[in-house]
Image (tube, rainbow, N blue to C red; front, side, top):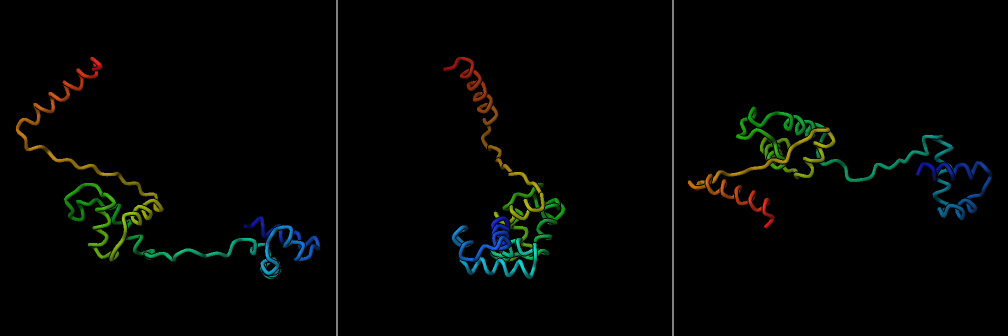
Length: 152
């Protein structure tokens, strides 16, 4: 965008008329005139985009800072029964502590990424209640090892 605006200004400085510039760059005459006028009033700064588009942030900087602080606090310190945050648990905690009324896991991830905070995907497992579990597990390992050795 900046280069294109600069080309319009350069063409104008070389005494090209707006219709010629329009044909050359396939840009409307109205846009070319606005670009030249803006350059005449603002100078080189006018070449930078003046676009502030997109949806405004849903959460305030204070809310984001609170989420970041929460993510950096060990869960046990806050009375939670686990040692590491998952994105889902962080979401629940942020809502429970009224930092935000509602937030998606993806937004939590984006906030943490922007703050250069890494997180681990947590894995959960359950112990078997089967009294023969250890024996079966060991037999399975023996079978797998034998299967690999014989190839069959």
